[in-house]
Image (cartoon, rainbow over all chains, first blue to last red; front, side, top):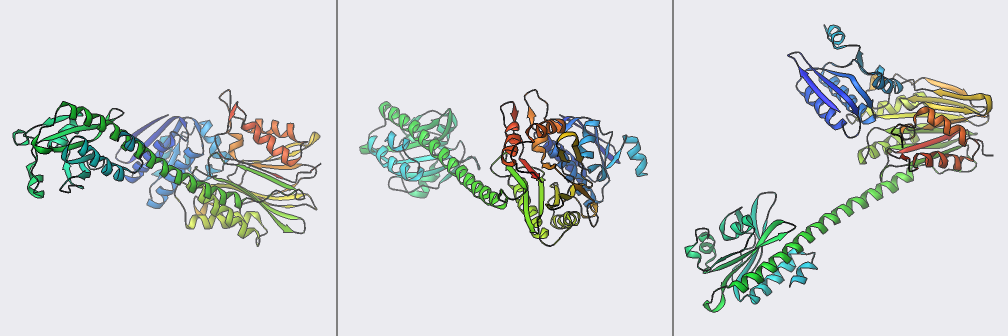
Length: 110
Length: 401
């Protein structure tokens, strides 16, 4: 799995690629919490995610909870079919703000 | 002497006893053992024999003849310390002891120098020789083995204590699961992937042929998941006795979990009430694996996805009640399970998946409930499928034939 973070003065985009599972999700969690700690708007790009298990989902949930607590914007963008199926199955698509693309997410925040 | 060290697990006692004998063997006035302190980087005198007590003395790494010996990992023989720049006069000044000569050997085990043995002043004004040095080097190696043995043992004892604690926790957890009874039309099984489980199920007779039931899966593994599992299943047990609606019960559990939430942890949970007389089930699910109703013959499968997200994420995500499904089971059986079943890895790198689960349900549908859950569970623990998650299964409305 690859985690690539792109920062601008307004937001951070954390792009995940590959399998987010028990082995790799701690890295995701750390990156997301760090970005949220810097009070960015944080977007997670899940376009390249081929598999996500419950530990990966838990990292996203924790980021969601922290963002809510801090009043930071947190959204998922470009969610791959594989990731979307997992989120929909658990009705988590009702929990996260999900946008087709980063541009959509940014536009929605204006 | 070497055996004293090798057989020992009490470093302090054996080293002190050994030092007295070492001092006798090389006819030294005093002897001491220094070990490196990995945390501070200092070298510390752990034991000594002789007229003055320097135990507890700390020196920066590499200091003194003993420090050089440890740093270089090779024995040093200094016949006249006054001519050696490494000699630390300050120690003599403090103790009043007069050091003339020093022989120091490293304590090396598995290629790592743990410390050194130092002997001071050969008796009767004589000088330490090559034979003394060889003897002390051999003793240094034995002592190092003993120290590393003792450290390993201490680590193992600590591990064992943790293991025993986990076993106790696992025992308490097993006690929280309901017994399976032949005259109850529900049957469950819980197979933890580790000592403790983040899954649970419960069956609670309500009287009048009604049974409350639940199944849940806490995100994550280990003791934190197990503790949240204990809390959630206890809440279910307590609430199910007074709340008839499983949808309202799940909402109440969510409110309770969110009040004292643990960030990043959540629970997927389904709860329901089975009425044996009418063969109906009232079912509510919060983010849990879709439940499956299997009816023999043309009845086929009915899949019931959750209508709400998992519990414990945020209080406002779940309204006053999770929407419920009312099912007429008829001759059918309701299967509830955790993702340990659907996500069990198969030999070909794929997962069993929901289709695979349905195939298995169909294949074992005619078995008695105990054999049926065992057969389903055995399928995921076969060599071509690694059990990689906790696994819990609950059958509702099975007909024991």
